[in-house]
Length: 398
Image 1 (tube, rainbow, N blue to C red):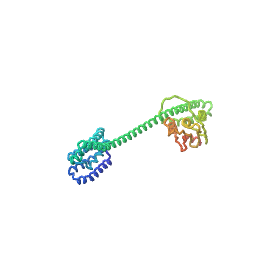
Image 2 (cartoon, helix red, strand yellow):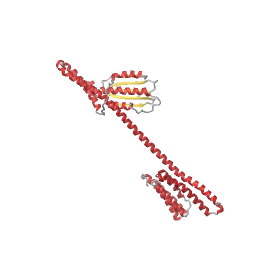
Image 3 (tube, rainbow, N blue to C red):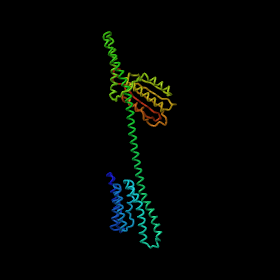
Image 4 (cartoon, rainbow, N blue to C red):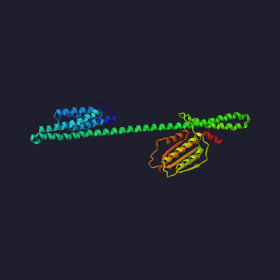
């Protein structure tokens, strides 16, 4: 029956209704309508105050007030303008039955008001002034059309506002659903990429442990036949185990799945990757600066995969007549990768797929970072940093 309004809305409605009453009650007294005039003003004021809180109740109060007004023989008064606000509220805020009751009230009220006014004027005037009954009927019909137009216009405006508000709410719900779907798709993409990374790390660790086991078995025999070879064997075991430990730490963040084995690309395969992309038609120009550092296998795979995905995106979405610039910069703290290609005009924003989320995930899992964005010149720039683990840096300082 009643709608939930905010305190501010309730306050506004009460202030408007009180101002309406303060203005019209003195007017009603001056017009000499007496108690009936005061009742009409008070009734319309109550209907005006209830129009948003309870549109159905406001419509009922307005009808009761009009019936008293008709029964007392009063003509239309300024307070009747509140009916327009009530009809607007029935269409804008009311329930389904209240909305249609408002339309019926607009039609019926227009006919009643026009007929009542015409008959009142006919009864108060010389019949020869008004004319014959056909003329009275004609006047009533014209008056009804005009009254229905005014009252119906107020109801129609309310309905249009209601439709617009519903459309905005539906648009907001649809946008939220699209956002939720986008986040779900991103989560699936990240999970799939983590599964692939877990497979890569699984192969790396399996290889490292196999080397450790083989070297340990060899050390058992070397200590008998060639004790001096023990140092080299133990150094190999330490290096391999240290690299495997870093890879195991990465695996702790992964959800493991059983997947097939496959060869792992390393830094030594990057030149072959560049030649492969050139053979596919990519105009690739690359530079390498700084002194290459020793990276664990997991970090090497991350570097290779990031370059591979960035160049693949450049091949798919870049302009084939423009060169792709690749810069590999080695620093003391790690390696910075920079891939820039002129993007096609139809490429808008960051595409949803495995590429960019996968590159970000690979960089994050080895402690690095990655950004992918459009530049002011219209190019698409991928910048990644893969750090050198602290254990490797310490070994380089010894």
